[in-house]
Length: 169
Length: 197
Image (cartoon, rainbow over all chains, first blue to last red):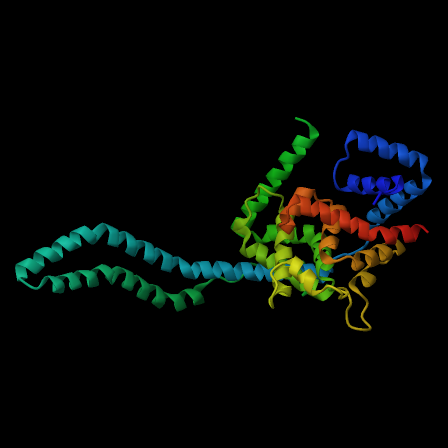
C-alpha cells in the first residue's frame, strides 16, 4: 500500500505533536504545507481542536473541594489519634526487647546456677528461664492493653476547621 | 544559571517541600494542594470514568490516598504525575473490584459499549460541562475515543505532560504511549476534518 504525499504530510504533522521531527522531515513538511492549502487546513483544524480542549470548562464544584478538605482533615485527626494510641505499645515493645537482649545471658547464668544449687532437673529451670524471659513482653502487652481505653478518652480535640469550611458544610 | 535550570530547581524545591508536608501530614498544605489541583484532577478522573458522580467520589478517595500514602512520595518526581498515577490506580481498583486488573482489561470489557452513556434524561458528563460550541465538539470527539487513547490525548494535550510523565502515570512503555497518541490522533481525524467541511 502506498501513501500519498498528503497522507504523509498529515502523518508527519501528527508525529510532530508527539515527538520531534528530524530536520529533513520538518523541512519537507513545511515545504508541502506551504504549497498545499488542503493539508494546511487539515493541520490547522486539528491544532484548533486540540487547543479547544483547553477551553472546555470542566471545573470542580466548590462544595466538592470543601468536602474533600474536610474529609482529609478528619482523616488526619484519625491517623494522629491512632498513632497516639499506638505509641505506648511501641515503646513497651521496644523496652521489652531491649530488656530481653540485655538480660538474657545473665538470666540464663542465674537460672543455671540456681538449678544446679537446688539440684532440680535441667528442663525445669530452663522452663523457668523461658517464663521469665517472656515476662517483660507479656507485661508490656498487658500494660498497653490496659492503657488503651484511657488514651482514647484523653485524645485532644480535632484541630479547628477554618471558617470557610464550616460555612460551606 | 539559565531560566530552564532555574525552573527545574524551583520545581524540585517545590516537590521536596510537598514531600516533607505529606510526611508530616500537614493539613494546611493538603488544603492548598486540593485547591491547586482540583480542576486538573477532576478533569482527568472525568475523562477516565466518563461519570461525574464516580469521578467526584474518586476525587475524594484520591486525596485520602494521598494523605495515607504521602510518605511514599519522595519529591523526586513531579507531584502531579504521582497524583494522577494514584487517581488512575483508584479508577482501576474501583472498576475492577470484579475481575480485570488494568485499564487495558477494562477497555477490553467495554469494547462496543459507550462508556459515557448514562441514564436516560441525564446529560452526559461532557455535554453538561461543555458550554462553548467548540468544547462540545471536542467533548463528543473525545467521548468516542476508547479510554486508553482518550487518557493519553488528555494528558498530552490538555495537561501538557511529557511523554515520560505519561508513561510514568500509565505504567506503559514510552513506545506504547506514542503509539496510543498516534492512534488517538488518528481516531480524532474524522471529527476535525468533519468540522472543517
